[in-house]
Amino acid sequence: MAIQVAIIILLVAVIIATLAVFLIATILQLFKINAGLSVVLPLVGQIVAKTNPVNPVVDDINAQLVVTRDALENLMLKKAGPDSAGLVESLFPGEGAKFLRRVGRTGKVVNVGTVYTRGVGILAGLGRGAPIGVSHTKGPAVRDPKYSTTEVAKLYPAPPDRRDPSRNIPKAPVIGKDPVHSPYEAALTPGTRTRDAQGNKIETPEPAPASPPPAPTGKIEVAPPPAQSAPAAPTQADPPSTPGRLSAKGTRPWER
Amino acid sequence: MADAALWIMVIVLAVVVVVLLGLLKRVLKAATSIPPKIDAIAGVAAAASRDLDAVAVLLTTQGYIKSIRASVLNYGGSLDAALPDY
Image 1 (cartoon, rainbow over the protein chains, first blue to last red):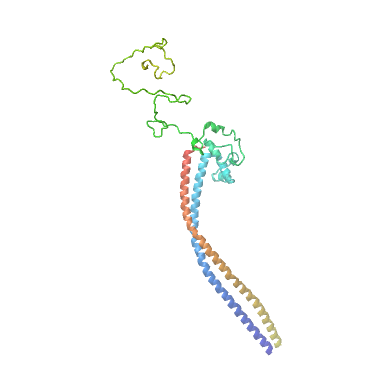
Image 2 (image 1 turned 90 degrees about the vertical axis):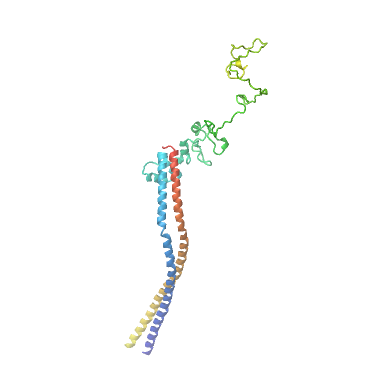
């Protein structure tokens, strides 16, 4: 009887000791958890506070972008018409159908990029001399590169070369009195040709020393023709020897 | 008879000791595994809080977006005037 009671007492003591040890250890761990959570909670509060204004700002940015996109899409529809979806498809594959849905239209999306280079369709429509025949400098030609720009070349026989400004077409001369940007300059020798039609220099005799002109008398005086020995000299009634150049100096009788 | 009852009580107490040891060990193991995870969460939360300091730049971005929108709309208006309609 005494042994059994002693064992029972011993077992009860073991149970109590075990409970005490494990519960104390668990309590210590709970204290650690409490301390850790007290560190985490303020950080979570900071995160919440910092992310609080994100939603309205992002919503506003999205609204601005949507307005801009709608305006550009409407402009695209206005300028490119039914080719709009194809242009969008050529730049952003897969977006042509979405573009059509957004603008409330239906139809087949034809990727104009398979026919024209990106943007060349628009430039060709504008008549800027776009290189329609070439898809890319490194890619194959999608159309005949030799003759596809003929129509554009007809419109602009000498399109300006943007890469070489010296080959640009000069601007049209400005007409008006004393224009600021006039391409013409006053001639140093007015009324005389310094070069012939072929561009060769014309040798001109040295001008005679200037003598003061006679004072006007108010009468028309016709000087008699100088005496010439040659019988074939033209008279006053004879036609000028060089027809078609009547304004040339020296062919009129009063200028001899 | 009384001896038998005492022996049964001894056996029951022994079984209780074993079961109690197992359960308490598991509770302690679970409690011990929580603090490292909380420490990890605290580190991640601190890093996230630092990263969110850049959220203030969103206000600058918002201003930029507004100015870009105005520029794009002006540009579109110019294109509208310059290009012929379809």
